[in-house]
Image 1 (cartoon, rainbow, N blue to C red):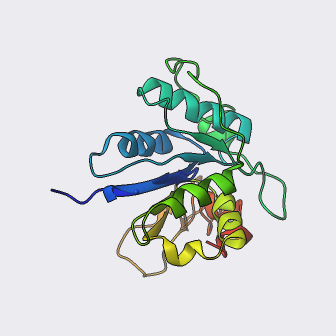
Image 2 (cartoon, rainbow, N blue to C red; image 1 turned 90 degrees about the vertical axis):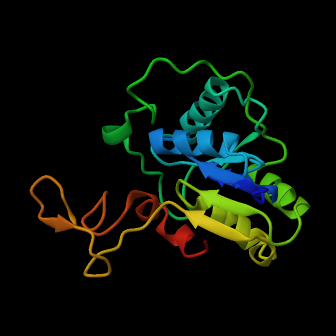
Length: 214
């Protein structure tokens, strides 16, 4: 049988092995919604919880979106902890021109949240508690959004770095011959590596200092 993996998502998903535990960190846009769906129903994963974060929209909106997605897929039992509303040293930057003001514009079919967010303990303490509950080297932290929650987690509880099996990040841009992938072209700007500026990807750009902690 496949070894299960625990996962925690931070907007960030956090998650654990029989299935592998995994927490998640999310914001969420359509790609985050699919990540939540996969983590919630993959038989090899045990989704421990989700922390939401600033990103495509405000923290209040990304939290509501996450709860609506979980209601839509029949997993309102997954705890959702609101995390950071802004990065360390700058105001929050949102992407209303890409994903709309709600962060999930384009559909009116999502149900209202079935439950509310979990505010006590806060997102950082909740992630630390659930991840440290898992056997060492089994839990995987997945960040599909900006990295502020992850940076706060590792800065506050550095022992988690050695306890986790791994960290997955959806962010960053590569180019300049690093791969054979063709570069993008946006609004007549010529070749570019980033999706937000010519050089920078959105999740890293809006929380760059936090990314150095992750």
